[in-house]
Length: 244
Image (tube, rainbow, N blue to C red):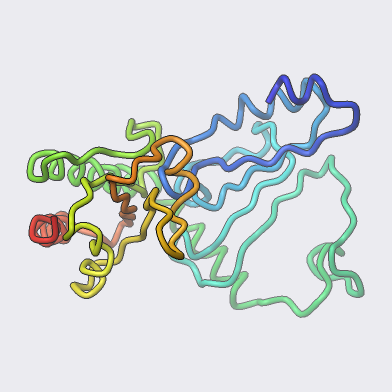
């Protein structure tokens, strides 16, 4: 990033995810923000995965824009927010009215806004206990997978510094495991795919392909929230052992 900005001939806009939604890797946005400051670049971070799950001090964070989505912290779907640093002036995308501080014309989604604010208030108030609990679920599932399924590994950063709501698991590819997501779904287990395979119409995950382009592995992303339990993880393990 520093090389790109150092070689730029015009003003730059940098946009980077705070946490990757598939593998949970976290970008140090303080470091990125300092680099952007050094080269007078504008910095936006997609913080959809982390707003409501990590504390933010926007007075100290060297970022010009961040984005958030209510459904990531148990608020209503279909409502999000864009934070704009007061030192940055941008033109509105939708013109015609003075709503949203003259930034976005049109009738405001009042229920959505109130729901977003309340959900964020609850998430922030309970951050320390809930984050600890959710992280313990992720660690428990990692331990159980390693103990009970041969050849399992994990994609991305799994340290305490990673996104604690996501675990991307790499399973050995077998005749059974190719239908893994389908089998999980019919047993009422919600997970998402991240296969590196490019067969047929399934292009798989470009993130997984970028660092682990192995056609003999099947990647599945499991997500965790405060509503999950260890008993649910035990049930997932029980089903996985039958499918693989």
